[in-house]
Amino acid sequence: MQIAALSLPVSAARQVVCAAGRAGAGEDWRMISFYERRRRDPLYFQFGAANALRAARLLEDSVLDAFRREASLSLELITKAVIAQRLQVGEDLGTITKVPVSHNVPKLWTEARLPALSPDDHGRLIQARVYLMWAGRYPAPNRDEDGERDEADLLEHGTSLFRTRTPRTFNWDDVERIYSTANHYFIEIRIAHGLSRPDGSIVIV
Image (tube, rainbow, N blue to C red; front, side, top):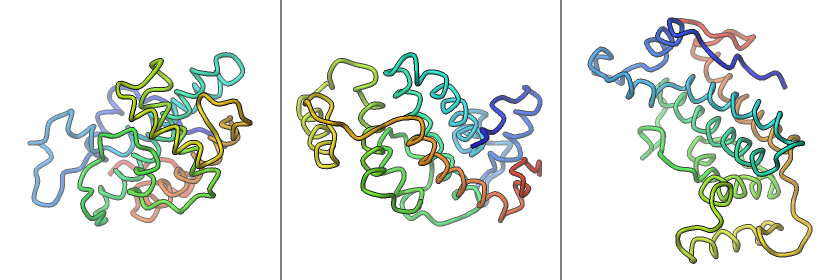
């Protein structure tokens, strides 16, 4: 998979904010803060996802915990990019009216209306959630019940953080495959609404 451009010059980034961080119906984008535009902008989520994916690729064979963090972050951000893109083009996502502030990657995947994954890949989304919420950052969660819940979810999908068993893989091939699914839908939505060309390049509007 070819990873999209990972950075923008400041001037181009400002153009993208104006082009992609659009106001909703009846809103004047000039009255929306710079930060709020970034919170709504699908491209910033997608660029962040691509950066995290590239970092994960570089880290896989050297620092496993860092690979897991960056890989999990890439899945979270590309899923949020799809949500932001659907909202920007006016799709009705029910109660979802802005990108959720959450690391719950399986829930985000459903909210993004992405296709159901295989049981193994759904389990990998659970792994990403656990790595992002605590296992990739801290020795233990703040509450015992959170750790017990996460361990039960992982065991249900054939892996574990602590028990001696053959875990499901969570490697580059796995992450790239899941990422590519979400990224495909992201690009297809943009093409359908004239925001990207068929080659994936951005149309500034």
